[in-house]
Length: 235
Image (cartoon, rainbow, N blue to C red; front, side):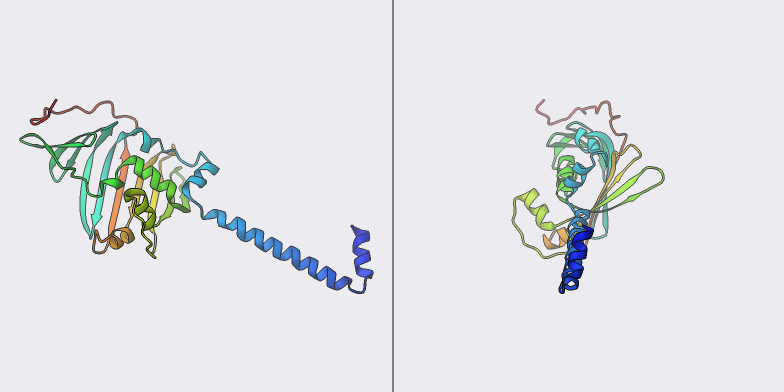
């Protein structure tokens, strides 16, 4: 290498050659930095595959937990509280008791009767859908806390949501929606916050804002949900 450098320096055009070699390496380094720098802005699924210990989707996929759903639509808050085990739920909404068996909902009004699904934006409350949306989103950043808790921030376009939920092809130019995922000390998801102003505005389901705050507790500890005596059940 030293002999080669000496030959280049003794060459009348040696300085020009060294100049171009230097800048070739300089631009190569810049290109590498730009390419690898883009890896910080990636899909959630790629981020998890890169480090499977980041957090566990157990909360979402096992369907065993107590929950609160707080849905803010155009500044009006709708609040649900209950517990879930497998396909069964028991919850309260607007002062009434509800029971869910799969896709069937029942409300207590003196006696138990079958009713319509009382959940607003229920597609965002389904745990399988939540897991899908997180993995379709683009990872943005994370915040660590001394307690071991973490929050992960993602961006998600309305076009992606429309395609996933409704098989609808849209081409909105927009400011993306946000997902904030929080985990406990054991890296289990205990909160998912959807900030969906863009989604609801572009799809004309709200006037100005939509926020869905989902919180999980008692993960894996719900032993049984009792089925009420339902007046108009076919059972």
